[in-house]
Length: 154
Image (cartoon, rainbow, N blue to C red; front, side, top):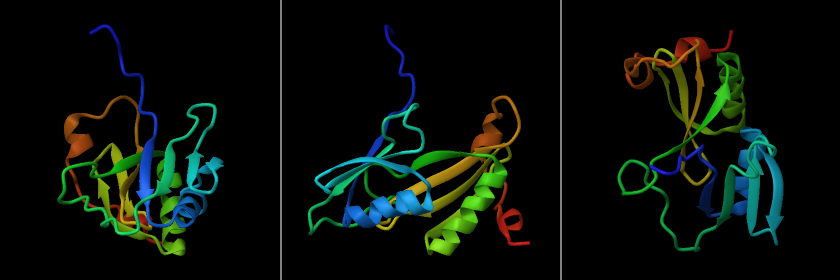
């Protein structure tokens, strides 16, 4: 091959309420609003220097059906690397306080993950890696259990 994909760029979400979705990504997930176009599209990122925008929210048609990440062909989920397990714990508390729908948690050994839905029902995986080096495939993909014991308030 004469080229190499370096990294993912951004996701574009069509949403029922762009302002509500922009608030979710800012207030709950901590992304920064870096621009908008006539309040119809919002550009959000965690780090402007690394990526101009990671999420773009724009309006859907009023009659558009809700997403179905478990059935239709198309994007099932998107993910964000949260950093450390302590960061993931803090985010979990923030999600619960905000009333977000946390569907499940997964302990895959080296990967710890939360699965949460945005206000329109799009599924996001919020994860951290524990340890150094690449995890073995079984560590990355085999669910060993939940993180419930780690996420419970002390």
